[in-house]
Length: 317
Image 1 (cartoon, rainbow, N blue to C red):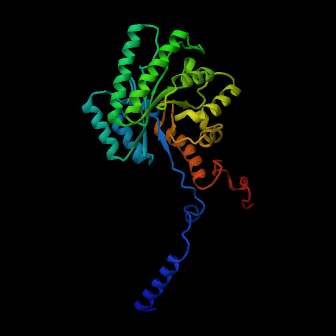
Image 2 (cartoon, one colour; image 1 turned 30 degrees about the vertical axis):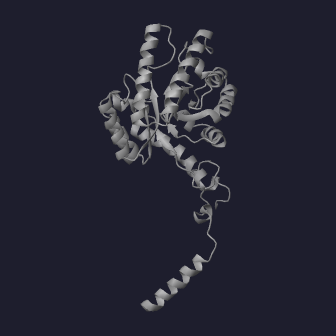
Image 3 (cartoon, rainbow, N blue to C red; image 1 turned 180 degrees about the horizontal axis):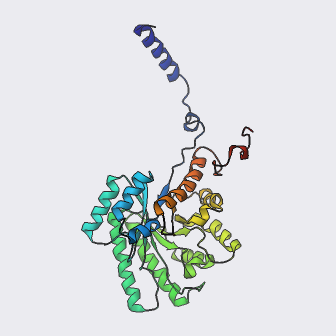
């Protein structure tokens, strides 16, 4: 075939394609649904490396981007956390590092800012820390900022005084967040916020569009049935999530599907706790969550595709 014949054939083929109705995105992708791979890693997952002086916030961001090939990060701020300051110059360096790596900041988890502690002076100190982080996030740009509600550890309910105070302060924080384009909320971490009836009461009382829940899988208090109910009923209100190791070894698909069915738009963030072999362990944990998202993206149910071939329906024997 000479060049003239080839070009004529190419032109004919192009014309035929142009006259053919456009294929929908799913057909062109061979059945893929194009669901985004919204993955991140809670920075606390590397608290062992942080304590040993082997990682800082910039190393964490580098790992998210180039070791784990993510497009999002999930920062942890506390007395021993990754965010060392709320000073503007430092925050701009962190934001620049996020932008340079084209990373979205999915979440900023703030410790030592719980809304209620019994000591009034300490409560005000925590409030100042909370406000400092709200202002910091105007620079950092996290989609969601987590503040624990506080209260009494080991208790499932707040007193009336505690509850009224917590609701009022969350509303103040939520209005600031709303005015600056992000959301804030509680996490089912400890105390009454980990008891679903109390968290549900709190969410309804705050009643603000910028207030939501960070759901720590397996973090609810109560019986297994209580926890399952909480996961299902809280799903429409969840803005962010943390997935521990034991859940990736257990009912991971079920828990993630609860959120998917509720139209969840946040990130699926893994959180590792062992402080040992963190690079490898976090990679294993992340791979299991990634496999669920990949299954959904290609039209699957989320069930792992890593079973031996003979265990999959229709597989050759």
